Image 1 (cartoon, one colour):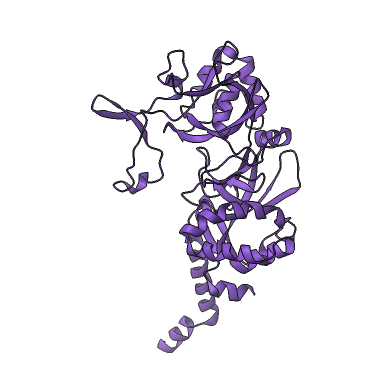
Image 2 (image 1 turned 180 degrees about the vertical axis):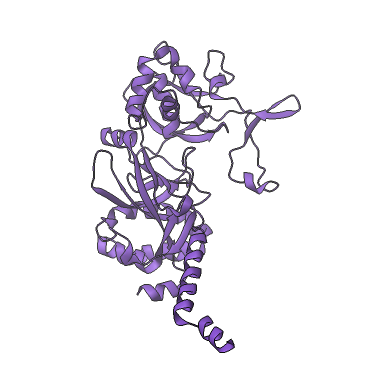
Length: 388
């Protein structure tokens, strides 16, 4: 009896069935990888990599080298190579990246590698250095009474948070909201840098972060992001969806503008639901694009805003998505050179499209699904050997 039981226990069929059951149970409990930059992959699995005109990305790469090479040894080596190698053709750029970087998956929640890709641009507004009946909507410089509260050393979870405040009596309280600033008795009077002729255009300039102001004499000056009041960014397009005014498919820069224009009595109420407020400085280097959070000029369709808590600024990214109104795949090498109040999460990017009508249209309508890969400097020789 003992022998028979033993034979049954070690029956190949029973053993295989038990093993299969264990494997299946194991698969059902495997957790998805954590959100963020994930495992390395080989270059030949990166779809579209052979088709991009990579030589167009060289200016964006050169722009960030002086900053990254000072603080990161691996980037010092990379940037030194840029100065010594011929990188005038797409193939030369492709060889350069494959020699110095390895692509990595970026994973979102629940193990998904798909996320939201949006866009922004550099608008042009009409303005004046002095207020008058036409030009009476101010752009402010960073307020002198606004405090930057740094709590990261004591509360690590607040390291990357915008904590701004002001002193009232002996207490530090939150800084003024949009509603408190944008009124006839503004607490920031006297701290204007110029005035524009369109309240809605000024509001959208806050969202874009930078722009150009054409003065009455035809001259042009630039304004760029200098600081923010510390309040969270709230998308008014989302509010219009919640109110049943627009559907998710209808929301775009143009439809929001139309709604504001056709509802003047309610426009300020809607805009004030976004308490975030941006302060500007004057830009003089108009021959280049506006500067992003990395403090380098942004390059149209080669710079993107990301969540810097997940993707380090300066990281080269491979983005696969589509453009609004098109089913054709849009795949680009871009660089993480900016951030934004609405850009949160791992598979999330905001493409900078530059300026002009095409840039405005793309930025206003861009809300596409896409995937992002981080191209990290080579440090893992094992994956390098496998991919050869």
